[in-house]
Length: 337
Image (cartoon, rainbow, N blue to C red; front, side):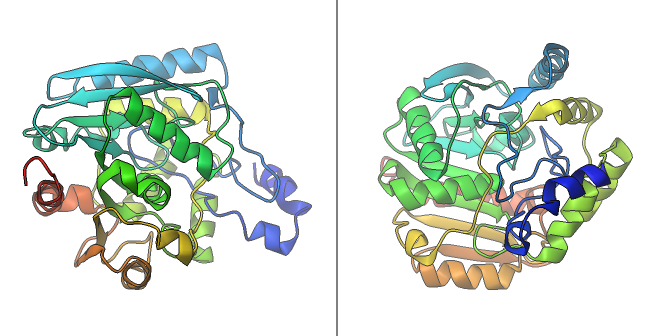
C-alpha cells in the first residue's frame, strides 16, 4: 500500500503534492477514507460514488438499515430526485418555521445525527441528509464536478423537500459544505451553523496534520481506526453496529469534491445569520486563528470557542452545544419571531 501511495504521487510536482488536502481517514457514522483516496493535481476520485461490487453494497445497506432501525424518534425517509441522482433524506420532528437541515461530518451520512436528533427534533422539523458522493442511501447518477454542482445539488434537495429557506447546519466536513452553500446562496438560508469546522473551512490545513491523516489511512483496520478516532475525538466510542457500518463503508469509492479553502471574497458573500462553534483544543484547526479569519471575512458571524474540548465537542458537551444551536435557530426564525 505504501508503494502504491508513492506511485500515485511520484510523478507530481512539489506543488501538486502539497495539494493533497484531505488525505485523511475519517470516521463517524459512515466511512473511513483510506490514504490512497486522495485529491491531487490529477483526479483519482471516482466520478460517481459507488461500492466496489454488489456484495459490498449489500453488506453496507444491511448495516445501514440495522442502525437506522435504532433512530430514537418517529421519522419518514424521503428519496429526493436531483440532477445528480436520488438523495436520501430523513424527516424527523414537527414544528413551525423554517426546517433544520443537517449535514454530517465527512464522509458520513444522515444517521450521524442519531445521538442528537431527539433534542433537535423536539420542537422543529429536522431533515438529515445522506450527501451525494459519500457512502449512504443516496444513489449518484451524475458527477459533482465542483463547487457549483455541490450548491446546485443542495438547492434541488431543498426544492425537493419543499423548503424555500432552511436553517442549514453541519459538523466538520458538513460545516464546509454549509459554508460553501452560504457563500453562493444565502438567499435560501434562514441561518447557517458550523459545528467544529473542518481543517479547510477557514485556514490551510497544517502539513503535519495531513501526514497524520495519510499514515492513519494506510491499510485501515479496526484497531488502527480506534487509535485514530481517540486522537481525533478523544473519548468518543462507536457502537458495534456503527463499527459494522464503518468497516463496510471502506469499500465505497467517494465522489464528492473535497473541501478547499474559500477565498476572502467568497466568504464575504455570506449574508445569512451565521453561528460558528469551535472546540479550543481541536486538532482540526487552530481555533483562534480560524475564528479570527471568520470574523474578518464575515463580520456579522456569531463565533464561540469552548475551552477544554476539541473535535469531540458535540459528544463532550452536548448540553451546551445543542441548546446554543437551537437558540440561534429560534432567534433567526421569522415565524417564531
